[in-house]
Length: 49
Image (cartoon, rainbow, N blue to C red; front, side, top):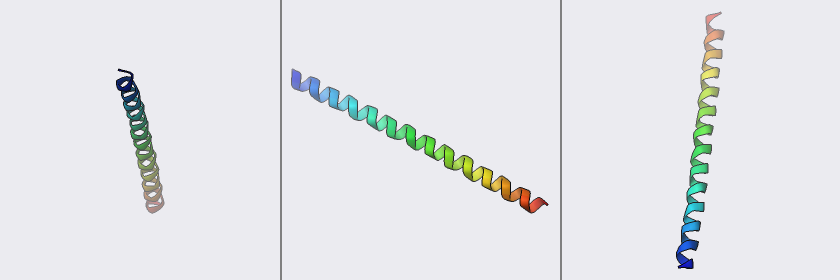
């Protein structure tokens, strides 16, 4: 029975870890997207003058 509990605990830890990695990945993509949009806006301003 304790073997099952250990495996379950390990599984939950892995799941938490994967969720954390996924969340960090989403945040990184958002930051890159924001940065890209800001660069495009900046270039558009330069072109319009």
